[in-house]
Length: 148
Image (tube, helix red, strand yellow):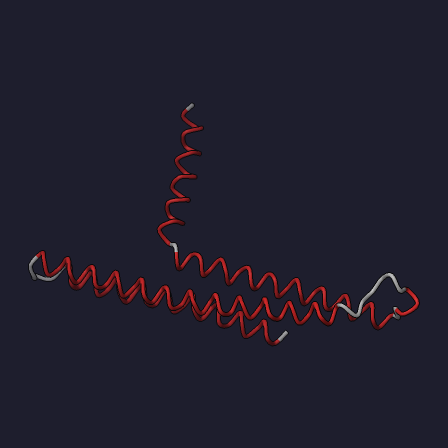
């Protein structure tokens, strides 16, 4: 499936771009915070860098959402093709139609998995602090059970 391969490339590219953004902003933040400028200026620059990072994450997340929507449209098109498969009319089903229906189901599954992956990546970009909070809450709940 070439279309899904290109969507996988898009997802990989966005993940790499996010990491590059995070790294670049981290380097800028380190340079600014280690410089000898006054605290008020440092705080404003740090806030501006956080805003830039948030904007870039949101831009990438929007592209991931658009790619997931493309997967949804592909599934819709595959379902239209699958409508020709009708098990209530066994006389109309030949071996080729059964093979084709099987391939369509496989394509739908692969497309759905890719769409799901794109949505997870988008969520991680849009709500990184929520993910950290969820992880820390899970860890604290697990460690609370250990102490009892």
